[in-house]
Length: 346
Ligand code: DP6
Image 1 (tube, rainbow, N blue to C red):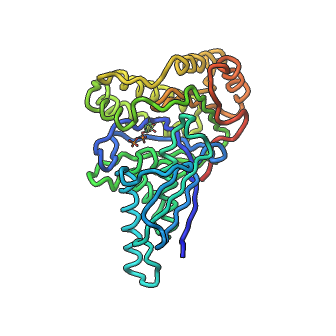
Image 2: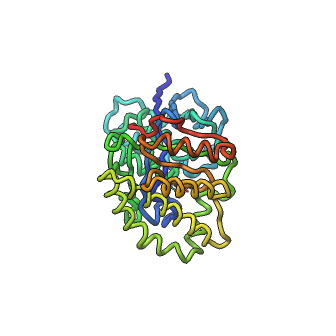
Image 3: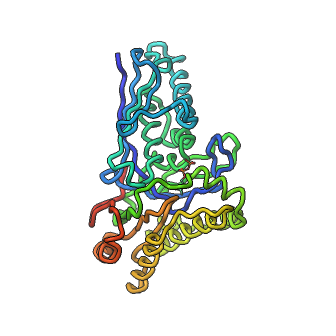
């Protein structure tokens, strides 16, 4: 017989960035981070996990392409954690089928082209962990599962919840206190919107893992960011979200994106993720805000040139309309069509 479970997980975009690991094997971060969960109508990973004695070994297929699990330490770490949790259940309840001993087949699909240059490892590992946890009928909470997903990809721990999600860096060396926590549900701020400007669909030249290592080892701005800048921004950002204060939310988001990219430029050799179009998007956001005499939009950039623009529903026409009019021809694609709800409850 074949046992099976399916689930989806959303993409999240950090507004306080995770950049830097204090433990490479466990994926423990140097600082806490905070993200906004995007709507699964727009971007999500759908994963089906199944177990059967008839399978010849563990396998993973992503968008129809077989992946080499054995060479991915991170995937292996997630699978072995989930298996040992299942084993613990089987050892106290002998009526349970012994799924922990059976090969796993994992089939994963994104509802957006992988080539679009949009972060997919977060949704990917979150969906993988949850699908197997469902298959194994594990009693673990989303916070417990976030601890496992974190070992697949740091940012993945924030995709096990919806709305506004903090990843608490924690201080223990075994990582048990390095988990995700929902700061507010999406319903707390239903007017929030996001649009992604696909500036380039190409793969980034320096991976996040590699870039972080270089920054931690070489940037002299980095210790200041980690020790003083981020901790105080986490507090102000949580207050901005609590108070639905868009202007504070926007300023902290933009400053933190700039601070993260500044530590990249300050790395040796320097790392560049933003390009000329990314910088044009930054200027346009500041121009729109200046002309509106209040803050109506904010940008943030991950380890690549694509911009994520946050705005409130009331400013949709102004923000998205201006972006399409001014940068339309330079942009390869837009995620989150005009007026769409982009944040989700998972
Ligand atoms: C810039 O989570 O992809 O998007 O833990 O090495 O897999 P690994 O890194 P990853 O890094 C994300 C970095 C970022 C900021 C963020 O999402 O917080």
